[in-house]
Image 1 (tube, protein in one colour):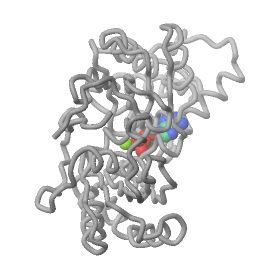
Image 2 (cartoon, rainbow, N blue to C red):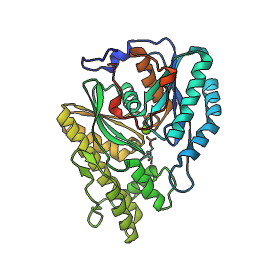
Image 3 (cartoon, helix red, strand yellow):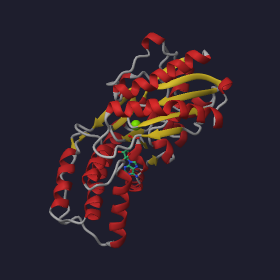
Image 4 (cartoon, rainbow, N blue to C red):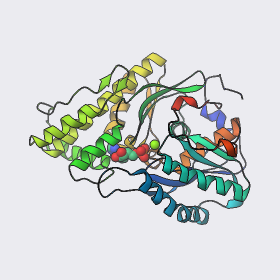
Length: 352
Ligand code: AMP
Ligand code: MG
């Protein structure tokens, strides 16, 4: 095993051509998605299906049933529109972290497909995949990553051959917090985009708005974050009669400011000048703008991939699978079991 020690450069990863396509299968939580990447690392289109609970959160077994029902159709669609089976060099899948029953559907599809067409199987770390697809698309080499998704919120930097978690949520993921807040207002999953829309409407109708009367608790705890206090306080504001769009605006301001503050500290401590956003909440234009402002005030830069690559998708799994295959080795069948609690820093980073 060779761990790259020189300054990382994603350009160097592209100089190796796999000579074919890697397919990636994502099934950690609400999304079942199959995508692909070409031999030099350009991600293709993913075909995806999303669990949309009518009420309540995501039930792992129901989500797994959803994935099992959609897997065949999604694979057929990918193979009829996007990928020629004879070009496929490997099958990558999300090995963890995630919901066990959901992960097992993706892993089973990956194992059968790899066996059927006789190509290597590659289990990958879902969190690391968010980073690598962002690095690839944004051409940033050595960023601090703000990974803001439904279930995860982490601030990560590469140090000594691993992506180290420098700070993270101590309770719920930021997307989960937005979804729970929205659900209590009768807004279906995913609530984040609707919260963003209401916040924008409030600000365009009340351009001189202040946060007076809309204050929420401070969500930063050292280098970590905690969102459940924000959630309860925001729900209280609505119960007290504050307009919902105003509370959505305040919730975004407070939650995003907390993330940006931790990300800025991480950049300062780790001595990095690039910030990279990933995860579904990175689709939010307000968060993107706050990150861009913070990075430029430090003389650095902020990067975010296209929205379809921020949310969970198969192409990011394929992107990381390609790197693991080029720089490491495939996953043996008896090591291909799912790892629900896989941590970001458990995966050795072998590539540039
Ligand atoms: P992921 O878990 O990475 O697939 O992302 C899903 C999460 O992203 C859900 O919690 C969504 O509510 C959230 N999300 C998606 N788009 C937005 C947006 N525009 N603003 C805030 N949150 C969003
Ligand atoms: Mg994710």
